[in-house]
Length: 239
Image 1 (cartoon, rainbow, N blue to C red):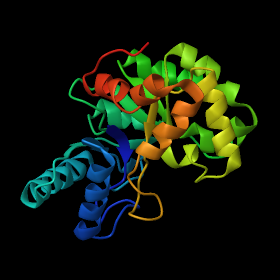
Image 2 (cartoon, rainbow, N blue to C red):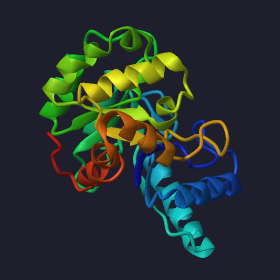
Image 3 (spheres, rainbow, N blue to C red):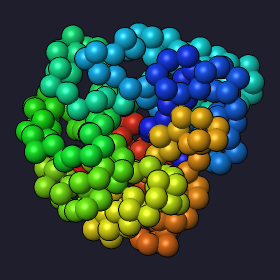
């Protein structure tokens, strides 16, 4: 399995505090069947976390994984806040995308409202050759009330990533109900852990895949953690 949204880098952002906890998270991921992780600290125009720092941390982590004998590959990326200021970061090549072809970008929307300008924002990203992946929209209150707010942006070409723990009721019944509706409407493209620690939000995917399989079948559920994220890593189209 491939986890394209994970806050496992230590000492930056809101992930683990120490390298030891990061390695514990990696061990949990490997035991769960995860072979590849995109490390995705939050980035915004006001963020002090630079792409260079993320890349250096990922290199350090991969070195430690080799030393520990853990069969896990980690690549640098970012969870980017919805903010018009990110376009200046894009123009100065300071935003990390997913995969070598720099085609896909994780985009985090607000947790309460549905931004009415989201479609225009997505269009602006697309004109720059980027496909946005909207992260955990099932945890957005407005979308919980009306999941089909996402239909237009999916038709526009955006992808949807849901959180593994939302599938297993870790974020409450409203998030779980929202995901079920999105799955049945074929509007989910990825399941990711959005992991932050070994206990609060661990780097696990298998239970979520089992839960999704009960809704859309095993083949489609597994594609959300293997063939779809692999295509994104390769810079290939899903649509």
